[in-house]
Amino acid sequence: MKILYFAWLRERLNRGEEDVSPPPEVTTVAELIDWLASRDEAFAHAAQKRALIRAAVDARLAKPDASILGATTVALFPPMTGG
Picture: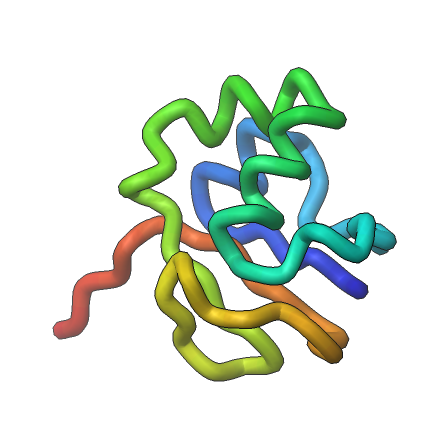
């Protein structure tokens, strides 16, 4: 699974993407964020305010309880504003 990072997450992590293989028990966006934080101190620090992180699973906006099973890409980013 490819994880894409945008905006301040990308800046704080100093990377725009990474390939990961979450364990089978990680099945939702929220669990993925928790798992990423548990394995990467930089991500844990960047994701301290998890309520500010939005996600898209295979290019579709997703809530924290959305499934990531079978997903090929998960994008993580801050809230967006339009204009």
